[in-house]
Length: 292
Length: 330
Image (tube, rainbow over all chains, first blue to last red; front, side, top):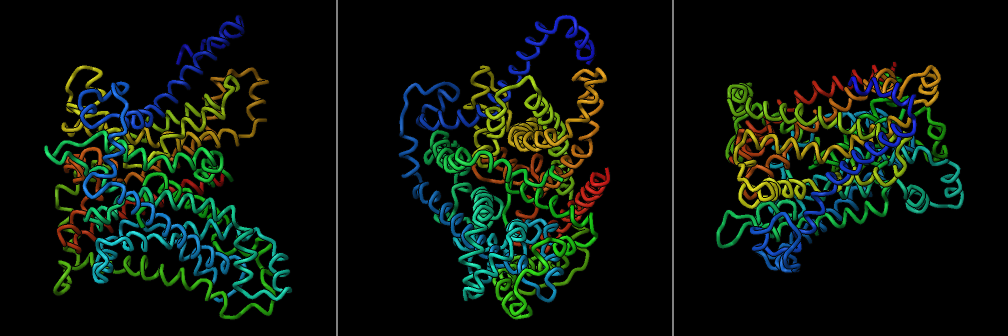
C-alpha cells in the first residue's frame, strides 16, 4: 500500500523509467493470469494424447509418446464412450430446437398481441424465476417415474424445453421490431402463423441464435438431473459418464488418458463456437449485468 | 431444469435484467406498455381473438406440466411421507424438523457457505484487479487478454472438475509429481474443500472479470478526468473514485454468486467423490441431501430439503433485490 502511495512522486521525477517498469509489471501480471487461465485446458488436450499407462507414469510433462490410443478407447470403452457423446448431442440439440421454437412462439404473442391477462401472465412466469429448478426435482422425478421415463433420453430433454429466461430474452428483442413490418405482411394476406414464421423468425434471427447457443451450453453442461435420472450407461450423457470411467481390471483407478480424450471431445465444440463468436459470446453472457 | 455454471450465471444475469423495470415502475407490465412499438402492436381486427392464446399455449402447457405442477407437488410432498409407492401420508412439519435436527444438513450448509465466502472474496478481488489492469491505459492488447482470461468459462463444468482432479491427485496427480511429494489433496477432506474453492475461483474468474471490465468502461470518463486535472494519481483515483463507484456492484456480484454457490453440485462431487459417486459429507454441498433422499426413495425429506434451500435462496435474492434498488438510486 505504502509503496503504491509513494510511487507517484517517483513517477513525477522520472516518468520514463518508472513508467516502463510499471508497464512491464502490468504485462507480467496479465500474462501470468492468462497462463493460469488456459494452462488446465492445455494440459487436458496434451494429456489426451497420452495413453492411460503413460498418464500414471508421466502426468505432468509432454507426452513421451504421442498416441491416439486414448481417442481410440473413447470408441471402445464400456459400451463406447462415443455413444454418450451422441446422447449429449441428441439431448442438447433437440432441447435447443424445441426450447427456442416454444419460446419464440410465446414471445411473439407476448410482444405483439394484446390479450386478457397478458401482463399478469408474463409477470407470473418471470416470478417463477426465483424458484431454483433443483427444488422441483422430487416432484418432477415422481411425475416422470409414473410415465416410466426414468433412464430414457426424453426425460433429460423435456424438463429443459420451457426456459423462462429464453422467453424473456426473445420477447425483449421482438418488442423492438417495428409493427409496420407485420402490418405489411398482413396486408399481403399472410395469416398469423405465416407472419410469425416468415417475418418474425427471420428478423429475430440474431436473438434466436444467441439464445440457442446459451441454451445448448446449459443442457450440454447439465449434471445434477442427468445423474439422478440416467443410471444406465447407454442413456447417460458424456458429462455423467466421464467421472465414472475407471480401469476395468483394477476397478477404482480412473483412466486419465481416456477421460481427458473424452473431456477434450466434449469441450471442442464449445471452443469452436467461442472462437467464432468471441464478442457475441462474451457480451451475451454478461448481458444486462452492468448496463443501465 | 438442470442448469449449472455458465448457464446458471446467465440465468442470474437475466434476473438482474428484469428487476430493473420492477424497481422503476413497481409493475413489470408498465414498461412493456410504454414501449413505442408495443401498444398498437397488431392491427385492430387481429385483437381480442383466440390467436395469441394459441401462440402462448404450447409453452404454457409444457411449463405447467413440467415445471409449475412438479413445483407445487414438491411443496405438498415436503409435508408428507412417501416412498414412491403405496400411500402418501401427511406428516405436517415433521420432515422439516427432521432435517433441521440432522447434523449432516448443518455440515452441508456449512460447506456451501464456506465454498461461497472462501471463493467469492479472492475471486472478486482478482477479477476486479485484472479488469482494472486490462482497462488501464498502459495495456495495449486488450482484445487478446479478454478472451484468454475468459477461457475457463467455456470448459464444461465436469471437464474442469476432472482436470483439477487429475492435477491434484495423490499418487498420479500432476502437482504432486512435479513437487515430488504425496500430499492427499483430495482424500484429506479439509484440504479437498480448498481444492474445490480453487476450482470455483479458476472457473468463475473470467465471468466476473468480463462483467467488471464492462462496468469500468461504463464509468463516465469525465469524472475521472476531473480528478486527473486535480492531480490525483492513478492509484488515488482507483481507491477514492472507481472502487466507491463500483461498491454496490461488488456487493451485488457477491450475492448473485452466493445464490449460485448454494446450489452447487457438480464441482465438489466430481472433484471429491470417487469415480462418479457423491462426495463425502465433509465436502458435500447441500443439494446432495436432495439427491440422496430421492435415490433412497424418501421423497418427503428430499422435497423438504429443497424448500429449505429455497428459503435460503429467497433471503439472498431479497438482499440482491434491495441492493439493486440502492444501485438504481445512486
